[in-house]
Structure formats: structure tokens, C-alpha cells
Image 1 (cartoon, rainbow, N blue to C red):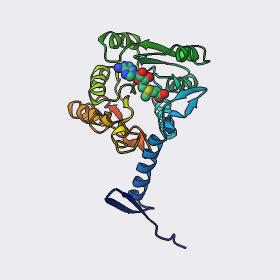
Image 2: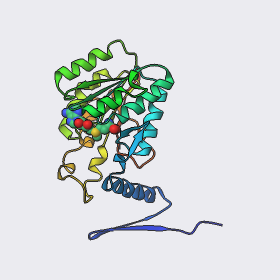
Image 3: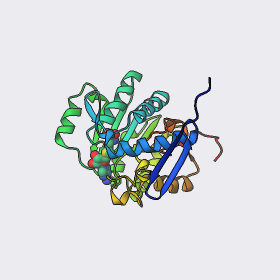
Image 4: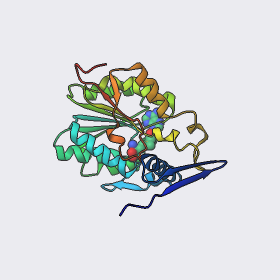
Length: 249
Ligand SMILES: C[S@@+](CC[C@H](N)C(=O)[O-])C[C@H]1O[C@@H](n2cnc3c(N)ncnc32)[C@H](O)[C@@H]1O
């Protein structure tokens, strides 16, 4: 028995789009709609990891787990610590690996967030630097903490304006070891700029534009689509891998 053909039509203002539901185009249409609804209803603000709030979508959490388990980094630099849930996620995988620490950077670490992380069973795998991620003193502090590390993974999840992410990419890319990644989060801001709850600036200023500029200037990095294959992701085009020695530029 063959499945009945099914079409999905989305009407938005004067525009309509129809796709075969069981095709890649249908899947992409539905994934895009679910991403918009996730942002509209702030689903990514409603999860915790081992008791601490984490601001990520479930599929993106699984992808970071895959990446960290495969890379086995010595240091994970995270710009944008917030409540610390993502740092706890990364630290929990490092704990199973048996080495490494997370260096969380945030312009403002609230006292109750700091206390919750410092009293967590994984606190020994987390260090915090308070300051803007693009301040030279912050960058110097991060570089000093990474000295001697064989594998460094960088995650950018702080201010999501094009200019800020572009500056962060330039400041932190030298730390990314060959074969490792800089992960640029929240490029989806550009893709959900049409939802009722969007901020007006999302249309013009977003991480996707910074990623494009960075890749054009840095052929030693390449986008890796493996970690966005769940389709519903806040991090489209966000996994940028530094090519290993001898790989083509
Ligand atoms: C989206 S939240 C981070 C979410 C967190 N990574 C998670 O997954 O749970 C963004 C954070 O970036 C921080 N931030 C904003 N501007 C910053 C800057 N210039 N430097 C460092 N952190 C900044 C904010 O204070 C906020 O805590």
C-alpha cells in the first residue's frame, strides 16, 4: 500500500506556499514553521540541564553533546554564560570523558546564577570570566586560560548582533585548534525575524551575516552541516570547523 499524497499550504499575507509534505521541501517548510513557533513561544527558555536553566532547543543540545563527545576538548570557551545551563551541559560531558573544563564568559554574571553553578556537583569543571567578550582584557584572560590546551572548542552565544559576532569571531578564532570548531549560535534570529514577538533589529543584524563575512575572509574554516541535520535548529550554518593541517584551503 502506498501512502496518500499530502500537501501542506502555508498562507502568509498575500503569499501562499504549497509543498509535498513528505518531501525535503515539505520537511524544510514544517521545520521552519516549528522554529518560528519555538521562538514565538520561547520554548528554548523553558529547559534545564541537571537543574540549571539552559537556553537551547532540545535538538541543539543533542548536537553539542555529539560534538563534544567526538572532539574530547581540553577547554570549551563559551561567550554568553547566562544562567550557566549550557556550561553545565558541556561540563557534564567533559566529566564523563574525564578531562577538560568550560570557561564561561559573560558581561554580567548574576549572583544567584554564580552561586547555583559554584555549588553544583560539576563546578570543578567550570571557570567564569566576567566582562564583555570583545574587551581585550577578557580575550587576554581567555587566551591565558587556554595556554597549553591541545584541543579548544569555542562557542559564541552572547550578543547576537552582526558586529559583535564578527568581532568575537576575529578575537577567538586563533584559539580554535585544527579540526576543532567555533560554534556560532542563534543565527536563526534572521530566520524568525517575521514572528510577532521578533525584535525589529533581528532583520538587519544577526549572526548569519557575521558567519558569511567570516567564512569569506577565513578559508581555513569550513561550515560543517552535520550538526544542523535536525533541521529545527537555532544555529543554522553555525558549526565552523578549522581545517586540519594539509586539508585544502
Ligand atoms: C542567549 S544568552 C546565553 C545562553 C547560554 N549560552 C545558554 O545556552 O544557556 C546570552 C548571554 O550573553 C550575555 N552577553 C550579552 N552581551 C555580552 C557581551 N558583550 N559579552 C559577553 N556576554 C554578553 C548576556 O548577559 C546573556 O547572559
